Structures are given as structure tokens and as C-alpha cells.
Image 1 (cartoon, rainbow, N blue to C red):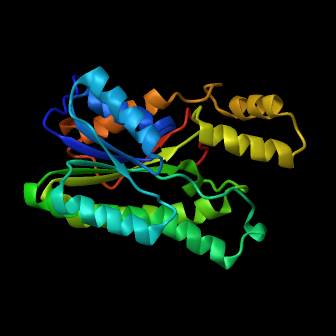
Image 2: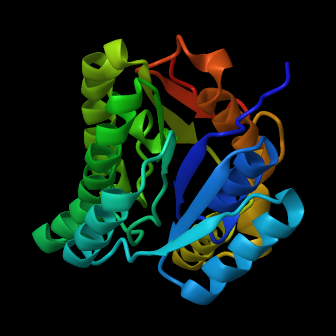
Length: 261
């Protein structure tokens, strides 16, 4: 099975590092023209140049700060006035870690803006062009915590679950337009974000980081952390014609970590 995404355009959020960057690289390798999106322009330029050097298409970048929703909305609206995309990968940085009793109402509002409203805004703008072309692939990067809440991620647990329900509803409404909407439930991948969370947990547990990382890894049935490129392979498949009949799903990629059915 050879995935070919030539003549397809993609917008990938949070794509200067980790899973987001791996997704951008894999989509470009499959032939798509990619716009990478994040808040750091220097890093975006570097990733864009890396994509162009490696794969040859004329890739682009879009500077947008997910944590500033009003500014983000203006940037997204302006982008879609002159651009359409075939593939949208909704990936944002996560909210601050912490237990539920540590968080205030304002923290939930900030997390809602970050994890829900930015995705909703970007998706609704992208849908206009997708509906006109009768083709679209919307892929949400989420977390296994929507199935089994993690005690140190109260904000993420809550808001990502809301987005899951919204995405399922959307998938039903746009399926007749040949637009698919799928959500990937992310397990433990070897990224800066996971290392940051593990440092947080290790400090709270009064443990050495190396010891905590080892314990975390041992919880995974495959006894290792995922590689970002392994994640990107799944995204490329969902973006392809091979996945045309897959929509409204929540797909765990976690090395067998989830215990729920």
C-alpha cells in the first residue's frame, strides 16, 4: 500500500516539534504541500525549509498563538480567505498540568479556548473549501485521557472529552460531503511535552526523573515509548484515500496502554 498525497494541501498545527513536526514531515513525504502552524516564527521557518529541502514542494508557514484566541481567530479567518486545505490536522499545545482541586474556573475557560475553540474555529473555516471540493480529511490529535482520565491532567481530561463529542457529531453531518473526521487518542510518545509532564510528576512524587521515566515506560505493554514518526504513519493513512470509509472514530495509539474496551 503506497500512500500518495500529491496535489493535496495540509495545515498542521503545533508542527515545530514532536508529534506535529513528525506529521508534517510524513505528509510532505507522501507528496502533500504542507503549511506548518505554531507561534514561533523562527522555528516555523526552519521546519518549512527542512520540508522543502527534503521533499521539494513549496511548503508554507503560518504564525499563530493558540493561547490568544481572539488573535488566533483573526489569523485563521485571514488565512482561509485566500487558502483552502484538503487535510487539517488539529494539534495544539496542552494546558498546564495539575489535579482537579488545584484548578479554578478561569483555568477551565483558558483550557476551553486553547483546546476546543481553536479547533472549532479552524475546522469550521477549513470546511468551507472542503465542502466545495467534496473532499476533506480532519484529524484531531487528542489523548487517551478521554477514555481513562489522568489525575494530573484535569484540564486536558475535561476539555478534550468535549471536543471528542463535538467531532463525532461533526463527522455525521459532513460525511455526505466525502469529508471524514477522526480523532487519535495519544499514548506515551517520546516528545518534549511528555518529558515535561514526567518532570512535573517526578517532582510531585519526590522521585528522580530517570526513575519516574522508567516506571512510566514499564506501564506500556510494549515496554517502550512511541516514536513520533509512528504516530505520523497513522495520520498519513487517515489522510489518504485508503481511509475514505473511516469517519467518526477515536483511535488509540498507545502501545496497548489503555485498559478499557
